[in-house]
Image (cartoon, rainbow, N blue to C red; front, side, top):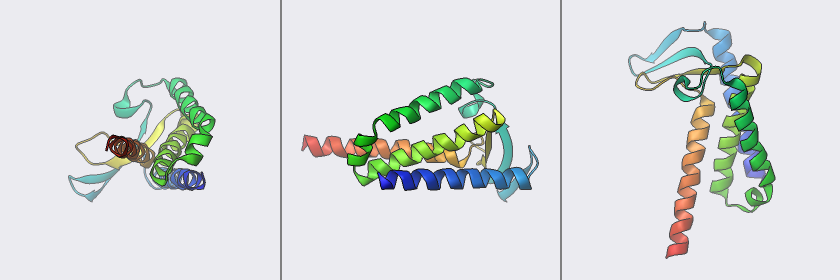
Length: 149
């Protein structure tokens, strides 16, 4: 459980700190090329979910996020008994969810800034959630193979 909590706290801190820097050093809409035409820092405020879907449904997203976090809290025994990979994965998902939840509650939008030019702009919380889900799938696959053979 300590792994889960450490990953969660570090993920939230890094995400919110990065967003704080972007909001205080950039103007909304500004784009700074880090690697021209490949990777830019582009400050936008996203009122929806991925790709701007369901824009303006802030309280819907707050509710869904709280349900997911409550589910994790209810399953704390399972988290405590889980292996390291699963604990890391859930810590990333929960930390990312909390980072974006903080934005939605404070601004009714999510602060995005990672811009690879071939994908919609996103943030570190989104990255943590995606990596966490990927690790959960990897852990499930490994467990399936272990039980199968």
